Image (cartoon, rainbow, N blue to C red; front, side):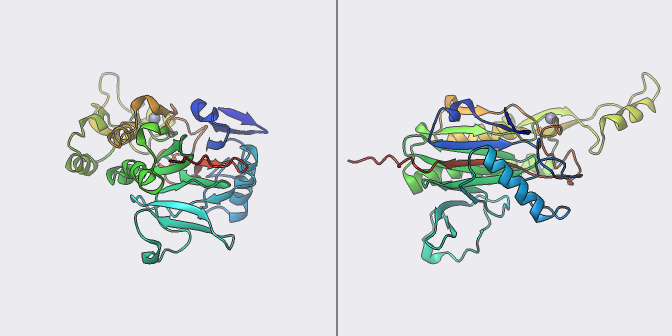
Length: 312
Ligand SMILES: [Zn+2]
């Protein structure tokens, strides 16, 4: 956790050692947004003016040292679409869908997708989350960076595994060289899911058991205060039975997809924060009933560092 000028964000110890890289997972600390997205809201919402969010974004970029970067992001749709990002000649950012020739693309800007990658300097690739899992990927050898947005739908669509494959396709990245960092997200402790989600994962993955944990069901809207009221309505010894429920472990799914794609498990780091447990630090869509802000996971290559070219 790095704090500066009232703002706080997370950096990976491992990625911080790469001087050509800028990266951060934002927290809600330090921004000027008000209820319900109190703090450093970095995503546009219907209950907050764009100007406030843009001001928060400028503040965040300045503090992490990315004020001169162009911010690249997509309309996140829980897909498995990954885009190669480049600075266009006209000052516009260009997004090219991986594996599809540009002639066949008719994408609006910004396009719909859930992963971004680049080898160009001066572009800050960002995904916004409020429970979904953000993943940063770095190829230190080829100097390629990527960011991925993975909720349960994206994870089911294998977005993380696909992003690693697309880095290989687009830049020749060797998965064994990649570093991966999993950011703050809702963790299994708080991520109860329905039977349809359990079935969907079992249908698409040969062995989905490690993705789920059976934990007691907790009423969805219950805050701590309400729980106490609820429990106190029952005389001692007559508390309602705790019903077990399936909880999805997004980190386990992400680790499975990374290692399936060839990333060494020793190269994967995890930021140990549950967004729903820590609404003092993070926005949580579920814990805050959908009315909240968005944090950002951002990564880019600093200008002034020539890309290391490999010659045969
Ligand atoms: Zn939790």
